[in-house]
Length: 306
Image (cartoon, rainbow, N blue to C red; front, side, top):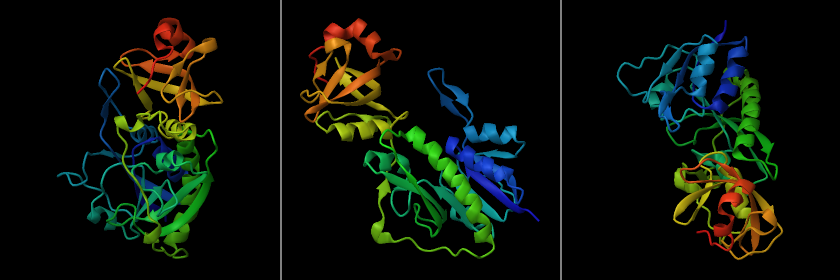
């Protein structure tokens, strides 16, 4: 008899996990719970979560809700709940409802980087290793007991986008290996070491503001961590200037000082510099460095970014 599961997820990471569950002959995904459609882009048109699109294409039942406490939200009986990048609070009665509880695929080596943005936090802090944890959820913020963990390396140029995909594949495989062993009683949950706990707070649009007094590595890590969202940015001539692509440079410039020598675009930071290859002024389309210099080069040379 197949194990009945309900899946809770929203983003692309969750699609990879759901794909693995849906393809496993030992499991039956009887419902998929995801967030409501949200306005997207300048048009504000409603856009369905990636998990909804995937689930519908697979013929899975989809439940969309802004809150699992809402009146009228009813979930079918399941043996186990699986959560991956769902993004909303799951009330305790829902966590406790299935006989095997609710499992979460979390993108850090817990108890390190509990919270909303663990991948970004690991990159931002210059970590070279992170990982995935399969845990049994409780009422706390990523505080539940651990079932299994697996390390994943972070390469020097890996961005959030790259790491999200790496961790999704690892998380899928680890979950499918762990779930039957947990259900059979072979794996027993082990408590987290609270003395090693750290947190990864939720990001917002302003999280990516660059402090040009920081070192090259620190700003490059910020760019990698926040690519593609919320991105990194600075201000020039009173406007927000989003830096879409950059890399460390061997040049030396004062912090925040812009240089356009030899047709390149550099900005100083912490005694060294970063080379910018694409950027976007507020309200304008994205430009390559060459396109930007064609229109703004004379104004930009010698400017100070803040």
